[in-house]
Length: 366
Image 1 (cartoon, one colour):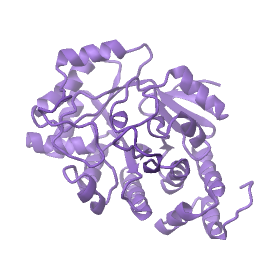
Image 2 (tube, helix red, strand yellow):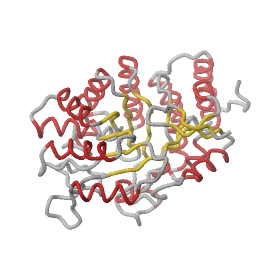
Image 3 (cartoon, one colour):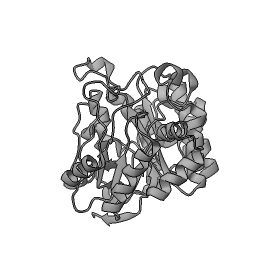
């Protein structure tokens, strides 16, 4: 039941569909993106989220690890990557990796989130060893490692098939894949913005095979640059179709594009209205996804808190030190404490739930 008066009659058929639990079309998604009645869109998304998750909002205590920033790919939006001999390029040795983690590890941490550059100057064994070393020293920590784009790169680097690469990584200790590398899943976008990385079909195929092997994975959408609204919705629908097939995705994560210069004009950043609308549209379109994540690294803590009223059921985690978005000019905090996350969620009149990687509750903060 919606409380506010619908001011845009174009939304009435969508309201009826949502109330009846019917799937929305691409055309419905365009209506949701273009309507001036954002409050009705928010209420619809909140209704869907409440059906799935009640008033619970999830978070995790985790650590971001970027073992290398050397990358063969040259994506138009990336300020993190370096060429092998470029100033600031790095590739952590096993000793440096362990030292990095030891300095940032804290009791209660449950996940290592590992992504990095497509470093072609080291063998595939480097990426396997990164995982196995951490698993040896922190056996109780879940390893969520590498994007589908990295997996496709590992396949080219090693000469192994995607399935063989995934099996090797699983044997080393990988228990879930990160969601990055998706950007926008249309070839027009990828040819212009990330021509050196996995194609749309390759990205989806990596996740399909991962799901078939029993891995639960994450997926993202990087919005706010050259993509059209229709392309955003095509992206969502392609992931939704794969979820119909495999039911292997845990969460969908809209990521707001960050300008490459920290001093860039505010006009180059996504607006608060676009961020909130995209969270809400994601919740309404991705009907077979249990969770939509509000990523405070990209949209800030206050908008992330507000997003819990727009369909988001996850505020991500503590992170400790996020590098990639901040290299591109993110103005947000690089980390939050557990207490800060709980405070944000309670401030939204929601119930904080500390979780593991797979959304199993660890502790509910009533």
